[in-house]
Amino acid sequence: MADTTWSDERLIAAARGGDVDSIAALVSGAHPHVQRFARSLCATPEDAEDAAQEALIVLYRKIGTLRASGALASWMFRIIRNECLRRARLMMCSHSTTFSAGRSMPSAEEEVFQRLEAARVAEAIATLPADQRQVLIMRDVQGISGRMAADALGLSTAAMKSRLHRARAAVQRMLSDPAPGVRSIREGGGIGG
Image (cartoon, rainbow, N blue to C red; front, side):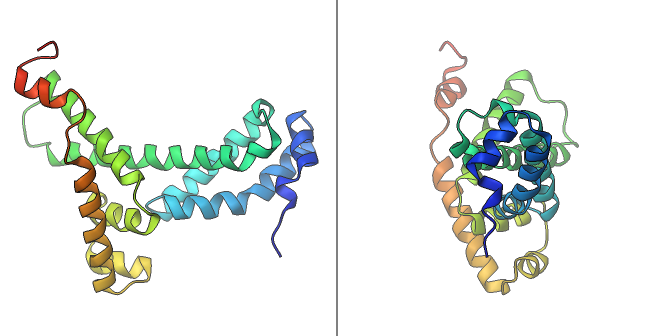
């Protein structure tokens, strides 16, 4: 039977009012729902656990700022989504830093372009369906072997490769047009030009 007490209007209203027992009951009841959503969105179980924990901390600290009791679930899920995206961006940035460690320091302009591109890639990855996002992050961001990724996802190697191919193709389509202004900056020789 599904636990609906965590999203009960009276419980949420009491928690918003500062009732400590209601806040504790709300956080406790929300935990399995928050974890389940985080597991579907984040790349790794560790990231999912961290994102869920962060969402529960925000819930505990900021429940009084929630405007409408009915918005609790969407508020929590937005926090988790943002935390998973933040973690994916950090992972991509550290991956690109490791990759380019052998080269000289990039110019300020190159650094701006790298950040713009990393943000675009992270946004494109975030729009993928959960099954494609997971396999893409595992293989291309974390560098996990195909066999290990397939095993972790409970897939055959062929199914994992198929998902990875679809994910890469979708990201490539989304990235095929440069970010607004980037083409003119690169080709025109400056921001004003």
